[in-house]
Length: 234
Image (cartoon, rainbow, N blue to C red; front, side, top):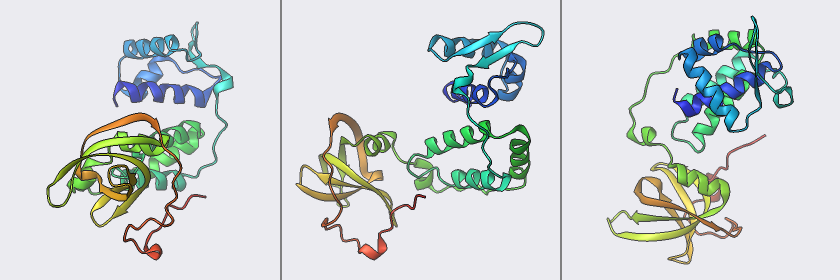
């Protein structure tokens, strides 16, 4: 776990048990670092404005302001492991990093006994590592951010014939097909909707320009409507 992920995990860990405390030794053991490293991490979080307080004394430790605590979540062990398995197979999907962050939040907000049951069950599920280069590459962070924030994206692009152009586009839809992930966008160069393969994009730049709302209806993308399935939510 890198330092950024550990700092975030520390906040979620303290949030889950607030107003109770965790000692530096407990946290060091949990994240497999030294007590000194935990103390530096906590100091950095405090300096950034996170309301973490040191409770001195024999049973002292660190506590987060209880107003930032989360209520217990009633996820079963099977439900939480199902999410973990899905995330392990989602490294090439949109917002995969956000998904792992969400799982850490879920585990931190579960009761200790439920979280222990989930970890025990996870130990009885195995996945064979895949070596698909498309899967290993994942989706560029700037493309995710453009879709999330509805901002104009700029990039170099090589078509199937190897011809290169510079494009400025308005992202409309992340689309998965036989060739991997594509970005359906309104292309300002062509003044029409276009579908760009992510593996052909280079020198990606996320601009500060907000994009107008555009509808997919009426876009001629050579995709039969009955074959286009939007992600189900809820």
